[in-house]
Length: 131
Image (cartoon, rainbow, N blue to C red; front, side, top):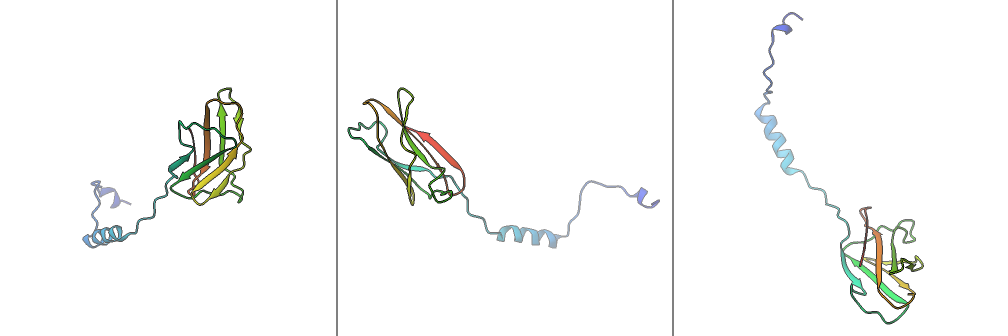
């Protein structure tokens, strides 16, 4: 212990050049993992601002990726219509077809409606929006 007390630590470590070269080569040769991203909505039907004259209303949301289908029953995905009184329309049944989710909704009285939707991307993140 007496000899150890006389050593001083300078705060810098000296690594052999061969080790640094090997570390650099290993870092450069590493493969990158694919990045997972949330689905991006690419198409809405009917489009925002559309005038709809028929009921039931066919609604379709198209995205750039597939959906995560929980328990195989489209759980985690939803589409509904909201009127100006705050009433929601729709039965909760959504069909998933690759990158598209669809439903039919019987609307109430004529007037403006807001379409609200949510889905779970294949990376496990949920997204929701309205128009």
